[in-house]
Length: 213
Image 1: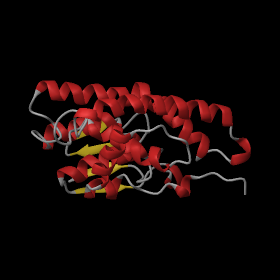
Image 2: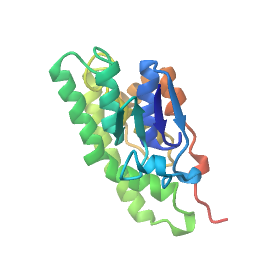
Image 3: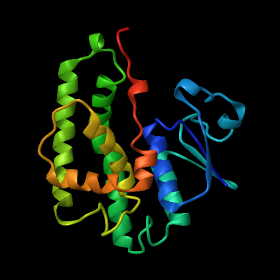
Image 4: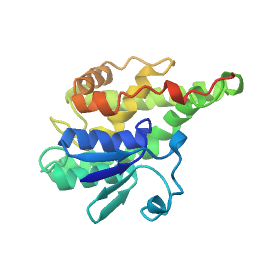
């Protein structure tokens, strides 16, 4: 049985869990990190020297880093679905997965941390606004990409959709101004129809908010 180490409110854990849900795999998830602590537990440290979540155990295989876990699950359990048969489609999946990490995530996480993980009295509103504008501009690139196709890399959901798609729940629920993104909004609506997305990604993050109280 698969074991996933990580709390359900972690966006990186949500990527792994969404993949598990789409593939219909039997799993056990153990809460680690955040309010649960446990990152220094010997059995966890033995699995990952970085002491970060998520970490996956699949028999003898141990995988850490969320995108690597998504790729592993897709390759092992999702050939023809999350793992496209077409090498070009796999490359498209890979490039958007890497784009999320290297290009979109830095400004987006600045917005999320600024609005959710920072008390109102300590927020840098100019920095948040700048990061929000940068995020919106990058989302515009994705919006144009989706103008002629329903999913990121193929005509069906692939591993390429998971990192980007996991980010959209928070993007569309944060209290920020967003540019007109009709194709991205349609794409997000398609993701919302998926049971695994609703279960593992659309997880409220109110408990993560820092207040001045």
